[in-house]
Image (cartoon, rainbow, N blue to C red; front, side, top):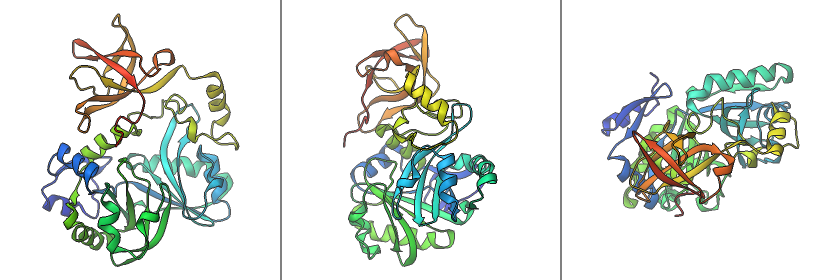
Length: 361
């Protein structure tokens, strides 16, 4: 098991640690509902240093990124980030990721922890012909997500830049907590505002301590991965390995908005055909009509009990106090307001397809 630079800090804080994507990670401290509430109403800090970071550099950097990702990275300027995905050759998704343009010819790719080696191999395969400079800096860097409506106010004293001026999916390279040249970005995964801090492992202890010092009067707390999951699900954000996989179609997953056919990318021709024809299935959001909790892998059934799909993510929403989930169903029952049933043990429980996000804030 790998550790982040802060693993010992989490243990000292009494975190419940679990194995996640090959790392020892804090799943909870005070409990998922308390931590969820802290982020929705105040400010909380996630150690997400298990995420992977690749630098793609040089005159061929953009060409490589355009080939392996679905979105149009040519639209990026220095200080701008972009959500994207890497299609595979067979109609599925290698990973979803965020692309940052750090300098004119330097891009930072932030990928999911469980996919670091797979993603590196996939990009490297296409780089054999293109010849961009690639560096996997994952093991040397830490990532903190400071999330919640009080994040900006609580952290403003730690930097000389105006944190409130960083727009969604933008970033600054600036001083933070006494460290120079830190990436401060606003690409949050919780739907409650805030920002992320990318720094070297050798710098993260100082940053962590100063963050908690600055946030003391704002009720800042450390937050685990369990609350990260309930927060992202209330927003309807996809989780790789659940809602999108090597087998799921990006069009069925609702990722058409980050699929740009103005360029040639891996499997773009087939993906375009699928988009034009219309997907057979769709990833939908649903709320349980009765008190019940849907879970990953549960069957979605029709009125006669026939299986029509599967739940990919599900939980009891702490904000809404009801069961919510995502799952794939045939397109003809994907319309908002459609009635479906979730097979929970021996009972088919009524649910309704709803519009995202679940949590309106």
